[in-house]
Amino acid sequence: MAKVAAHVEGVYERIPGSGIWHARYRQDGKLVRKSFGRNRAAAIAYVEKARTLKRSGEGFVPSTAKAAPKTKTELEVSVSTTTVSELCDDLLRHIKSKPDVYKDQRNPPFRLGLIKKQFGHRPASTVKPFEIMDWLEGMDRAPATLNRYKATFSAVYRYGKQRDKVQVNPVRDVSQHPVNNGIIRYLKPEEEKRLRAVLQGAVDACGPQNERRRKRLLHRIYELDIALGTGMRKGEQYGLRWRDIDFKQKSILLRDTKNKSSRTVPMIDDVVTAFKELRKLSLERKDRAIDRPNSSPDDVVFGIGDNKKWWEAALKDAKIKQLRWHDLRHTFCSRLAQAGVSLKVIQEAAGHKTIAMSARYAHMDHTTLHNAMAILNRAD
Image (cartoon, rainbow, N blue to C red; front, top):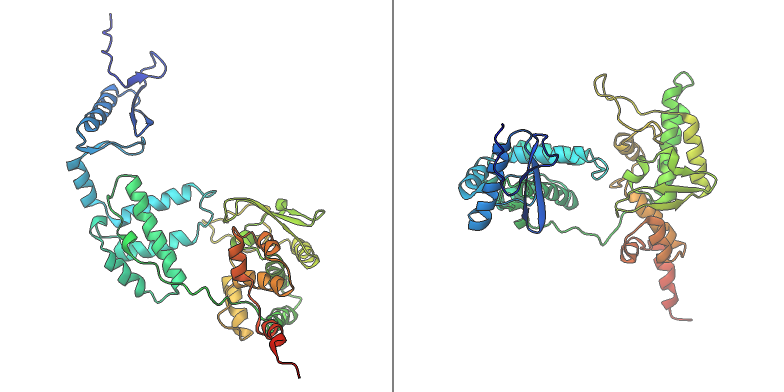
């Protein structure tokens, strides 16, 4: 007769007689469960180690099965050998595994690559705040861009702490770079005329023998029309799918926006026309290479995923300086404000979380301000 294994508290078979063993314990009010397959001895060792460390307080007992209980000595060894490169790789895997949560799958990997290039070989516990500060200062980037790099670097350590690979986050002691939000750049009417002349000129100069190129040049004009007519964020615009465009109701459904909620954007006639012309073009996004097929959905609206190259070239030809694509969103809000639209309507149209954000965008141009102040002139 087979010997019955002695009962061990916290070690069990979910299905009696299956031979598949699990371990469980409670930590910080959470029930932690972990499967060990047929290795009952490992399950016993795991739960007894966690129980011992809880009693003594001489180590780390995780509240999730993703991390393992560790003694103080094990913690010191783990912390001293974990490199920044390992932490970056962990965060990158996490980001790539959750595309619905981390919608930007392009910029974080790029930033992580630069962090690895500079600090990857270093044990994570040896990196000092002043080293991070010096690195950021030496990048010669805009303050807002430096803050995004800082946020990514901090996320590297924060995720490492969650996985019990580091105990400190030196990035927290690095100051934010002050960003001047007082003056908002927007597209002036005369600049828009020059920009549209450049875009239309390229279409007119394209001969009939290159129909595909002509379609792509027209595509740029419609991209601009939609950006100025909706005020969508760049990611919202280029992530659109045809299923989200309702021509009958003249509306656009934006799913899971920056504010973690969906919203509906009304379409003016210019925008409706632009979308209809886009659909006629029937452009699809290109594969990056034979072994790197495009992963965009089949019903994606725009035939490109990033307009940076053509946008910078068009601005140069139109002699427009220091204008980002995001400034078209500023333009959208500014033009509504200059037309006397209320801040509440602007907040709804732009999808701002607070009306204070709308007030920041709703500045007046010099002509409007000058005319308004004219009432202060003394009467003759």
